[in-house]
Image (cartoon, rainbow, N blue to C red; front, side, top):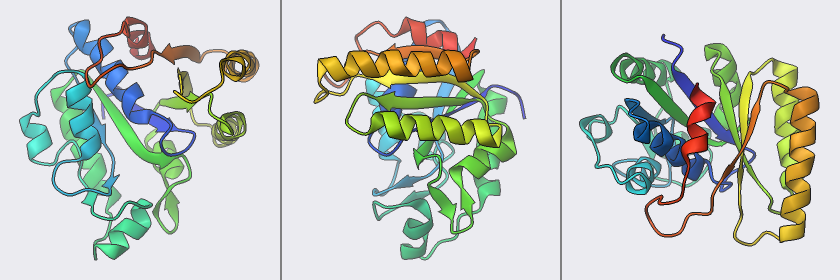
Length: 229
């Protein structure tokens, strides 16, 4: 597989992976890069992945044929829970080869594929196989989404320490400005993360995702394109 696939994961659920993925996608599209986003597994909806729909809406691009035929999200489950349980509830089995094949097809068609995971690193795809296992097996460079919400320091450092332990290549930490975060905590948290990255992941970029106003990204996200350079 071409080395043009980047895996976007988060420190936990609802940390802003979808916004980060859309932000990087918009930055690449604005530069003229033929890029697309993919969702590994979607739970809690039917039909087209709601995160894929959000990527298209936020970047003001229409759904494409690869979205409509399921290539950009090979598995969609109805119950909003971990993939392993969502598959069980829907009487389905997750075959990671199907996900890999879909990514390969996209990788052959596009210059860059942004593959968004479900939840955090240790979310189980099956009862014995996690998202981190999948990332490691495919040697994907990782973009980790974080924020300044309460608990984010612990979750972020645990995620980064786990990546270091498993030899997962973290190329960027992207900070989301949480609407409910205290500005004093935000400032301190960002400084702490940058200090940690400098000491432990010196080659990883630290970037911020601007606050999104409305349903389309109108803020300047051009700096995010540097992640994929």
